[in-house]
Length: 77
Image (cartoon, rainbow, N blue to C red):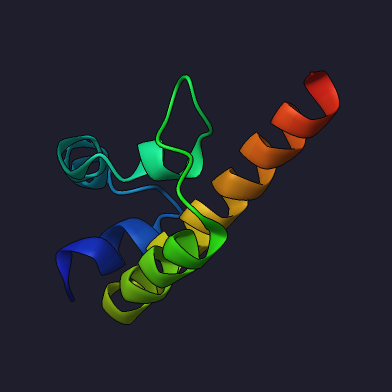
């Protein structure tokens, strides 16, 4: 069984993914300025598609977090 599968069996988020996400700076593309890069929807979709090619659950994580961030920005401002 792979390293990630062990975490999925325990229903836990793999902690080593956090460091890679920080290292690559992926989340800043899903947050609007002044806190992020405000990437276009097309570019964000391509990033999600590429993540899904590697690990679909990670792509779902970004989709869900992007939806919550976008709704917070929309309704809280």
